[in-house]
Amino acid sequence: MQLDLIKPNSSKAKRLALHIRRNLISKHPAIIIGEDGNAYLFMPMTTNPIAKTVRLKKNPNPHPRTSDEKSYIIFRMRANKKSAFSAPLNWTLSPEDYRVIEEYARKKIK
Image (spheres, rainbow, N blue to C red):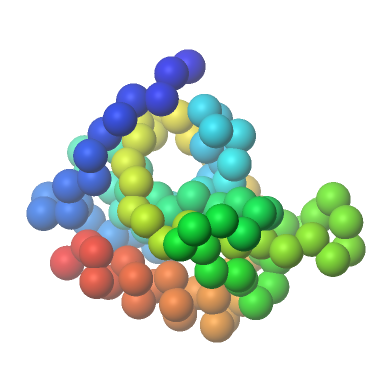
């Protein structure tokens, strides 16, 4: 599977209930915030602090590799085909993290 560079288009997109799926191309989890036709709009997650990342209050992964593993979200909306994502993961965001991400999604997807 190859990464298709799909430019996010929020003008026709609709918001979805926030949920987490694994991106099958990057192998990283992603928070799905909306959909645009046959593409998901998402925010990537990582365990490394890099540019434009915000640390989540609580790691949503129920089985982290280590007990003190941190989780970060990259505040950049991206898009990719729905076929590039797994089924929804059974991960849960803390209420504080959910509010922050929901606010971002509200700004990006009208």
